[in-house]
Image (cartoon, rainbow, N blue to C red; front, side):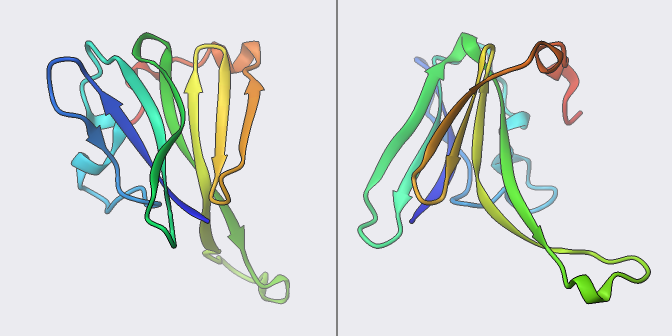
Length: 132
């Protein structure tokens, strides 16, 4: 099992990275990938840290010009007998996705990597104002 986080690297300033297996607290923009200026970005990556050995490695990376977005993957759980009124399901993070111009790279907490091609409809999404 691994803990995952996003990572940005530039040639002229220190690397930025998110929290291990957490999107970060609400309102803390330093822990959010979308809040950072990506001008001159050379590498966007998903890093993994083994839970037992603490070994850190990059699972997947792309060139900065090809990077689109990071997306957390989560699963929702709820009691099927309690479906009355409004319910907030319990959620658990399952992994992190690196989105590039052509592909989606899904990295799961067990270290599994799944690469899929983005559909034309998804490519038409404008991420320029995402999160703003």
